[in-house]
Length: 335
Image (cartoon, rainbow, N blue to C red):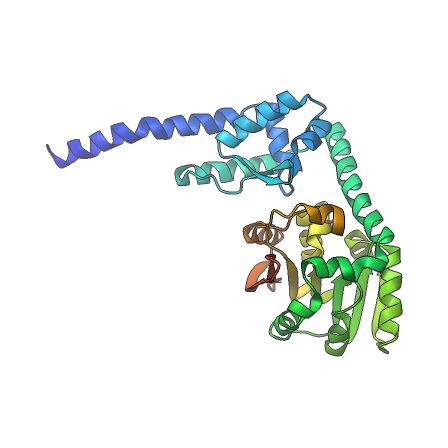
């Protein structure tokens, strides 16, 4: 058998499989409703019942569409307790289809979600955010106790402060989003000329201010609101801390994107959060919306926001939880 006939034989065997896989992907993405689903799942994860509410269709119909998207490698799923959450899959498991999928997603990202779908989606996100704020307002006196159930600042605080010291290029202003009881603020106030503590729970912010006042810190401003408030205030921070905040937020990807906009050039975002876990009790006991995150999820969100990945550190707690400390930098633009 000649070399050419060998090549032809191999091609003939693999080509139908490749064509079939391309056909499955294109067919899955060829439905208008499924295109809208992929748009909605761009930077966040939703459960089947939430997606039914967003698209106003029956659960059986939504499950059917999600199965088609999943079989084509366009979405991935993750179980949290009794709920399965779906998110867009950034890379197709078939390496030969990754370039096609990337181009497809780029086209979908330029599409506009129908106004009624966008409104119902906003309702879902507001419900998630309200539940989180209400939990902290209601349990402000139990914050430290609840935090210690998962990870105490004394267990990982030194590592956070070390990463801070190793990453800075400017020390004019720092922003801590969700400062809790202010355990990190003393270090931040000693490092930066000005520090802003931002929280969307008035009760938590007041408790934090009372505790920090006793430490005599005088270069800190307390700001009630969220990252939209920070954007409106045109804050420019050389450093932003998200310490155990993302798993309480309804749209983690948006928070990281907002942080990227708030950072100065060469500014640093330091994310401290839980790795993905299966301990569903934290939702009820600690107000968690998410059971931690796969490190790649955080990397994808940061890269989508235009941030470059820096150092990472992973710490395993005695109770089995793993903490990820992730450093991201806003690179200076070149002209």
